Length: 358
Image 1 (spheres, one colour):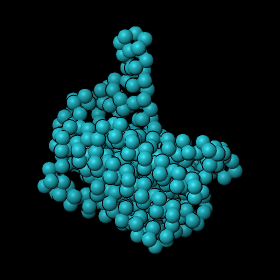
Image 2 (tube, rainbow, N blue to C red; image 1 turned 60 degrees about the vertical axis):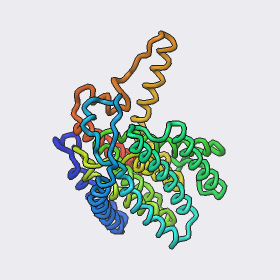
Image 3 (cartoon, rainbow, N blue to C red; image 1 turned 60 degrees about the horizontal axis):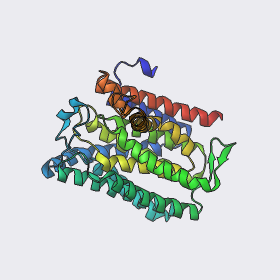
Image 4 (cartoon, helix red, strand yellow; image 1 turned 180 degrees about the vertical axis):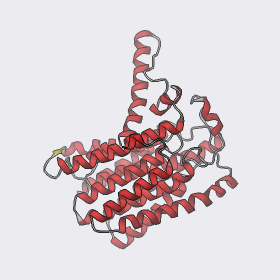
C-alpha cells in the first residue's frame, strides 16, 4: 500500500506517524505518547523556524564537498548546525526528567548525548570557520566518539545497566557475556556515524530518524517493564522533534542539521537501545542507516583491494553512500528520499511483527 502512494512527502509522513501514535496510545491505553510527540513537534517547529534567523545572522552556512554530486553545489550557503535546535530541547527535557527521577541510567544517557553533541558542534564550527566541508579530522572525531562511548559502556556495564543477554524475543536471546563490551561500542559509534553518513539528501536522515524513534519507542513499550516507560517517552519526543525539524529540512532544504544533529541522533538511538536491551530491534529499524554505512565500507574496501591487486582501483557503486549512487543513476533526490522513507517504515513494521511473533 505504501508503495502505491504517488507522492510521499513531509505531510504524508507526519500524518502516518500521527495515526501510528494514536494507535499505539489506544493499544497501550495511555495517550501521553501522542501528547509528548505533539508537544515536541511544535517545540521543534518553533525552534527551527526562529533558529534559521539566528543562523543566517551568524553566517553559519554549509560548505559542500567538491567530490560530491555536482547538483549539490547549489546547496552551498544553506544554513547549517540546525541540530542545535533538534538536540537542545531534548537535552533540557532529559535533564529535567533525570533530576526528578534521580536515575543513573538517565544520567549516563544525558552525559553521552551531550558528549556526542559537543563533538558534532565542534566539527560543524571548524568546518564553517575553515570554509571547508570537514571540520575535525576523521581520526580526531573517531577518538572523541570512542572516548565518550568507552566511558558510557564501562560505567553502564559496571553498574549492570547493560544486559549481556541480547534478547531477540521474550522467550530467547543470545548471551554475549564479555563480548557485550565491543558489541556495545560498535552499536554506539556505528549507529552514530551511520546516521551521519545518511544525512546527505534533504530530509533523508531527519525523516528516517523520526520513523526509527517511533519504532524503538513502541518496541520498548512492548517489553511491559515499568522502569523502561520513560525511554519510550524520550523516543516519542525525539520522533516529534525530528519531524518538526523535517518541515524545514525536506526538499528543498532551508536548513541542515549538520554533525551536531546527526551524531547526536545516532548516540540517542544507540545508547537507549543498549540501556533498554533493544539492540536487536534497533538493528532492524535502522536498516537504512546500516545499509548506507555498509555501502561506504564496501566501496572503500573494494577500491583498496582492486588497487592493490590490479594497480587500479575499481568501484562497485557510482558513488557512496548509496543515496548518491541513485542520484548519479538519474533518480530525483525527492524520489530517493521518499523511497528510503517507505523502506524504513516497512523495516519498523517488520521489527514489530518479529517482536510479536518470535
